[in-house]
Structures are given as C-alpha cells and as structure tokens.
Length: 226
Image (cartoon, rainbow, N blue to C red; front, top):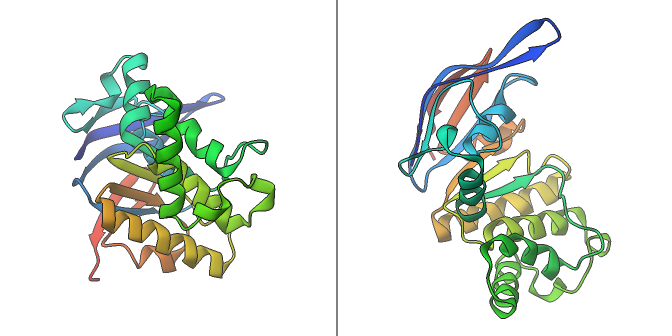
C-alpha cells in the first residue's frame, strides 16, 4: 500500500519557486488501480515520479509497504525500484539493436538471475502480452502497439508489486490504444499489482475505478462506478 502524507515538491525556475505538489495526502491500496489526470504542468508526472522513487519530495513522506521512499539512501531506493516497481512510458524506450526477448531480459539484470531463468521469464512475459512468436524481432520490425507491449512485458517480467504508467498510449492510434489498454487491464486483473496511470485521455480514465485530478499541485480523488 502507498500512503502519501503532506507531500510537497518545489522547484526553482530562475528566481521563482514553483510548487508542483502542495501538501498531497493520498492512499493507494494494494492491488488498486488509479488514473491521474490534470492540465499540462499540473503535477501529474511529478506525482508519478514520487511514487516510483525517481524523485524525492521537498517535504512529506511516501510510504510503500511500510518503507518511506523519501527517506531511503539512494542505493536502497535503487533496489526498491528494481524489485518492486515497473515503469511504462509514452516513449517505448526499447533498445533498437536488441530483440524483444533481449529488451525484456534487461529488466532482470539488476536482480542477478541466471541466464536460463532470465530467458524463461522473458519468454513467459512476452507470451503474456501476445508476443511469444515475435520474441526474436527487433523494435523496428514491430508496430507501435507491439513495441509498447514489449515495454509492458519488460516492466512486468520482474513481477513487481507496482506498475506505474505515464501516458502509455499517448503515441498510439485509437485501435492500438484500446489493444494496449486491454492488455494492461487483463494483466492487472490476473496479477493484482497496484496500477497507477497518468493519461490525458478521458475515455481511458472512465475505465478506472478511481481517478485523481491534479490542479495547482492539489489532488482530488473520486470513485467511479464500474
């Protein structure tokens, strides 16, 4: 479970101080699904970065399963990210010279697994997103939707407790958008990870049970009827 308490993030922009998050309190239950929406520059990606331990708050605590990410030394925070948190971004961030199989395996390198286990787990992850037969293809040989599914497999191959997605369908057309979302929703239901997604797409937001809206650094959460 995530428990955010009075999380504030301030940046310096020239001589001005910018408050991206302002005393945010937020609880996300284990296995929960939350969509984050709001205007450009309103703090959506900043909040996701805080949840992922990619940035630290100026004030406040971000507790994940009893551990305050904001207070961890960098080495331990890196380990938490490697073991517990998967990331999917708008850009697929695949290595163009590696096959789909090899791209997925890269997520397992920090876990110090043997080569055989890495191969087996990467193959299973690709099969789970419907790309078992495309494992030997490099990104340039795959469609945008297929590349994003490889990125999803890479995020989930380490079996994280949390999946954080920042505009994961932002580079896709409508049909590929729906395809990728169906994959994400199916995997969430099957594996019960905590799923937090930033999106501008209101059609996708309506599919989630909870929506957090950010404006001027403040967060308002509403429950939605399925």
